Each structure stands twice: as C-alpha cells, then as structure tokens.
Length: 178
Image (tube, helix red, strand yellow):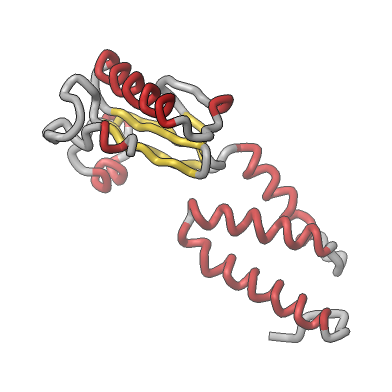
C-alpha cells in the first residue's frame, strides 16, 4: 500500500505532486525505496512513506535502515547508480537515452565465500562433505538469481546432488554415472 502513496513517474497523477516519483520493493521485512528527483522531493517521499509505515505498524527490520546516495546492499546484492556519461558505448546503447542506470552486483564477501567453497571441488581429493556440497550449491543458486545465464549450470548441480542423495538413500556410496 506504500507504493500507492508514491508517484510511479513524474507525469503520474497518483500520489503527492510534492513527492519524488519512486518504486518500492519489499522482501519479507526488508523494504527498499528507489526515488528520482530533487533532495526536497525525495525527503517528502521518505517522510510520507515512513509515516505510513508507523501508522500501519508492520514488523519491519528498522535496524537495517539506511538512506543516502551511493552503493546500497539489499537482500544479498549491491545496487549502484551510475552516470550514463561515464558508461562504455555498449552500456549506453543498452540503456538508451537516460542520464543514469543501475548496476546490480554480487557483494565481495558473498563472492569470496563462494570462491572458497568452489576451491573444495578443485583439489581432486575425491570427497567433499554433504554439508559443503549443500552450502556450495545453495550459494551458486543464489548467484543464479543475479546471473540468469548461470541457471542451467546450477540446475545441473541440483540434479547431481539429488541423484547422489537418492543413491545414498538406496545404500550406494556414489552417484550413478551420467
């Protein structure tokens, strides 16, 4: 219902004309708000939305709250707003005639943890614990939400894991070939 208070574009007749247009997303108890406009209009949008949430009283993760310009971490990703004027030609061709665009990236700590997990499979020791496999495939799955091209490879990992678990339930000590 908070999105209804915000304008979806500068030409929208919905919401307050004093507020900056914006988009609101909510993941469980963790909202994110992206606004476009002057600092005064953005402040008005934030004030209206915060007042609305205080009136409704939803169980939000208030301790995670931040505001500002620059990279922002939300639900395991980093969002950065960049100027199109500084972008390579290929990016400008992709985003079109806009002044700024958003880059969604993998936080360094998540990338480093996944890299460390994947190293377990490169040493050729022949055995990786079930917990390590589950954690690694789970982290790869999380990455595939940001990098859709990785989804078929992660699906193959889940398939191999399911086959190994099925084989183990039948008393075999390794996954079937193929």
